[in-house]
Each structure stands twice: as structure tokens, then as C-alpha cells.
Amino acid sequence: MTIENKMTGDFRSKPKTMEIAEKIITFTKGLGPSRQEIKGQMTFAGKRKFLWMWTYGGTGDGTLYLTVCLDREVKDPHFHYVKQTSPTRWNHHVVVKSLNQIESPWFKDLVKAGYDFANK
Image (cartoon, rainbow, N blue to C red; front, side):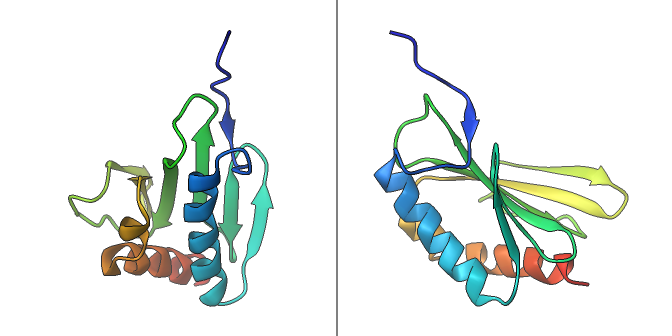
């Protein structure tokens, strides 16, 4: 049997991952208007995209990968990595494995900062 390891923004086959994603979606929508799209990843955008969420077919249920784009680098041990993609854009990558992570102030501050940057 071959495990499909394709990136996906559709979490319905992974209930724990879906539960985490739903809480992030609810929080993000509570920040104000944004556009949500699902292709290879689930994305949110204001004037520009600011949040990407995905998992892989072979990744265990309960793990969600997430990137938030900001106009500055934020140094925090919670980030898996941070990469500068242009002179004024930094992608902050987080591997989410629990509801506690996304309910913490640092996580909510990150998503809100991404939302604010996307709507400047």
C-alpha cells in the first residue's frame, strides 16, 4: 500500500487536524473580512494573502502546517523557521500539533499581525 503524501488544504479526512483548522478559521474570520480559498493549501487574504494552512496525506492526524506572512521578521522559538521572501516580506512557519498552541497569545498575535499586514 502506498501512502499519498500530497499537500492538501482539505482536512476532512483527518478529524484532529480539522478541529485545529476550524479553530484557526474561526479566529481568523473574527479579525474582520478576508477571502478564504482551498486549492493545494487553505489560504486567507485581505489585500494580499497572509495565511496558508496545509497537511500531507502521509502526515499523522493532528498535525497542521501553517505559514503567516509579515512585513518584518519576528524571532520566536515557536517558529519552525522564518524566511525572508522579499525586502518587506517574511514567512513565519509553524508546525501545529495541539489546540494549546493555537489558543496561546503568541499564536493569536502572529495571525492578527498577518491579517493587519495583509490589509495595509
